[in-house]
Length: 308
Length: 253
Image (cartoon, rainbow over the protein chains, first blue to last red):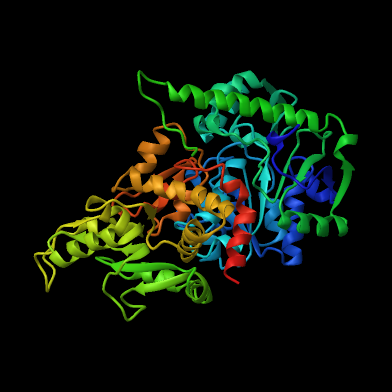
């Protein structure tokens, strides 16, 4: 276990101590509870999260979609939103499994939303975008220092919205609006219906629907987040948490001291860090191969390599 | 004074927005001038305006090729500077001056504007309209470290500046379309949203997680493409963001 897990100061298995919150969240409620805690403590004064149509329709001032005809917006389509209360956070909690361009609001959060200390949740690539934006703020005036907490989520790959429709409606034969929760775990894609039905698809079925841009990504565990988290490595209902930066260390210590989380040492839980490491290496190896293939994609012609 | 770098600022056809962005570093600018930079000439912020021999020249604005003085100034800037930095969208890519058709009083014949890279060799690009004060600050600190730092600092500055040097080699045109041709068409877009955040004219939204541009709004500043983590991304630099940010802030104390 090495570079594939990125730099981190501590790694634990954790879950929120708030039972109500756990009902809304994907796994251990880490992201939702951390943001709620940071909001309560004034560490952040708002956060960019992936909400859905229901939230956006009820809170049009919190998304940048002023003139939207909400009847045209599909269920489970993620909509980046700036939230400033715990109630909003709960309303937006849970993984959407398709692309939410959360970084698109990072400047606007400091402008029309008036935030001085912004929290943001995102995938590993979005954490890369945030850090590139802090070092090379080409079009991000005064944004870098306003990013007060960046939470990363583990990510093997993402799906375009239409891929999720394909999986849910064609493969799982459920309507998008009747889905209560989606989940990837134990080698399967799970779709839970609002009436209690559960459909599982082998992950193999999902591969051809993955977003192509994900296949050059070399980060599984959000190496550049302040704190990154995901279900892999921890028991059901718990999340694995990497505390990575000085900001992350400070926020995590305060949240733990305030009793926000139950914690177990990562080496005491099953399946543990080895599984995280295995999946991270799988992703990195596979995508490095894709980058290699791109070099000789044509006849004497390469596809572009984004990495310098 | 001895270990400062000498810097000049050539102002061509630009709106002074880049100058304002530089000045918007407030106290940081004063620290830069106190400790690291000997500003040899600069319209607006200094009394000396004529081009002199310097280590680093920042150039704001594009070149009006119908204006002999502008052409002469950009050539002289190149001849007298070790490093030329194109500051802002106009110097890098033409930006809004690309849309000029002349006919403006009192010089109606001034109609043809080119990015400086079409007239001289440019070493470093700082794209954007206007580039953020922090971007200008970071490049200024790195330029200092490159010329006056320890070996370690020189290595870091080289790594930091490399993507901006490669941007200067890449070309003198920019457009929202770069996101289509160089990122989406190349199978690299993952829908993070950086381009929409960076666009100074709000020409970019996201539809189903991919950038959608209103091309008539695009001013061709290059901010979206260069902010994109899939246009260029350096694993030598970005993962060290914490240490680099701290070093830059410490340098400006």
